[in-house]
View (cartoon, helix red, strand yellow):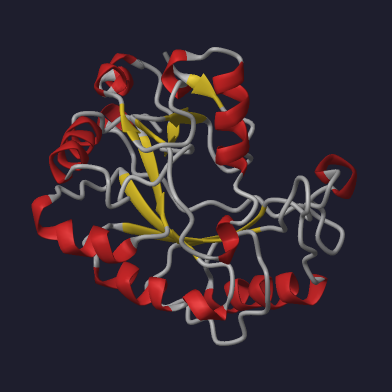
Length: 244
């Protein structure tokens, strides 16, 4: 069954894998970890092991049954390229995405080195977007690995933004998302950090999406930057028959 998403930059989530582990400072207040604990307490079978990494074969073919084209965030509750996800299962996820050209799949990872290791064994059809999370300058090497993959659309999630990124090189990047951290213990974001990224995107003609200012009350903080919202997206490939 398709799940509508409240994440501003997608339409649907699909979680053939759940659970993860922390690899960098951006993971400190992981929303997926909090949500997994909540769903486990509610007795949701899929999360009976909490935030342990689990592969869910029964939901693998769900996108095949979705007739209406969707923008799909893959593994919003995990990382497809986690070391504990079998390479064969990753290939199976890709095979489903290959069979569904009507959808655009957004795969976001903090582990692009593993994506690169498996690159030759994966079929990167144009409907599969690959993104990396970069929360501070320390993790800019993730972008270097992203550029080396065969993904046709490459994007950055600079969220939660924990510092300035003055050396961010946008060559080979098709889309940039950024935003502040939200929820309990949220670390503050500086407006000038966001403006610098926005200006870099405008200068390089890269679509820019500002998700939120964040904080403990993200709705109140909103997502307006310098008098407007920024909801730019990369172009989606036309479907057979001229549909979008």
